[in-house]
Image (cartoon, rainbow, N blue to C red; front, side, top):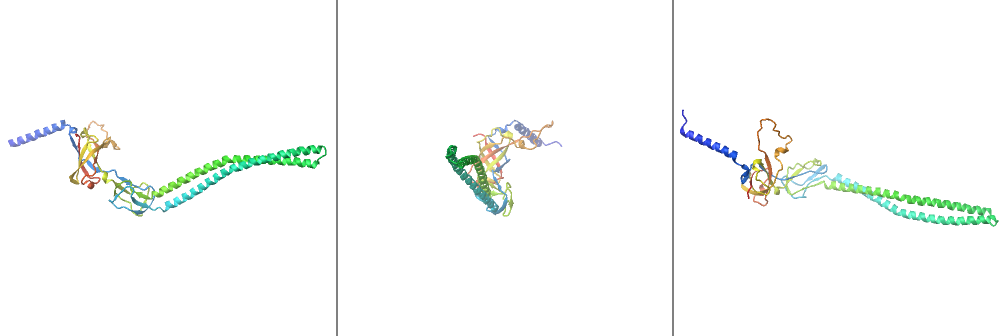
Length: 344
């Protein structure tokens, strides 16, 4: 049965349109368009994950899910009894270290007086030796002509020997007192080092005690809360997240052939699937330095002869201007359709 003339005309028209569309697609430069749109985009925020810095048991939780908090607000409290005991012990060690430094400082200061006394004793002993030498000489002369007895001469000689021995002992005492100075100085430096270590231990214990108060790092809304009273928590384990809902942005992934004229600073409009009646204004904040596939652990390697080119996508960060009507209704993860105006 022959095909009706009208059908032939319709098929011919469709063929022409298809061929024209294919030709336009092959020759058209998509990147030259004044407006670039993609539906591969989502609302994002640089939220902060809150984790404890010390191990312990949760004694109190002060926030609920989806609660708005300010930076520095108390979120949870870890039982701090062990940390207070550790701080008290460190403070006691610090007092002992300070007492040791004070005692050695006083001993070092008194040592100067000990050395001065030993030096004075040597001078006194030298005077006694001089007198004893004179007496021994005199009694020796007197004994020769019979004016003094032999006993008196021996007593004078014995006194001279005793005074000389005493002088030698006082010199040794002086040397010992002087040699004690560097020893005391070394002991003082060691005590000061121990004092510094004790002070550091107190600072560390006080810091650990402060870590039992878990506070909000930024302004935002509490989400992904897993912490409960009685939980035993470990340092570094996530307890909750604080999402800065007032500082949201859109991460849009444009095909590489759309990136010809997209630049940082260009204006953009954003539609969100959940809020179809609203259009938010924003601007291109930055462009990713690499495509998503470049970060893959196993990068694709087109080594075979059957190569199929696949257009890659680049992430474009679009900030949303604050103060716009309905912006408080945006939430992280919402699907968005941003349009970048590549020509001002």
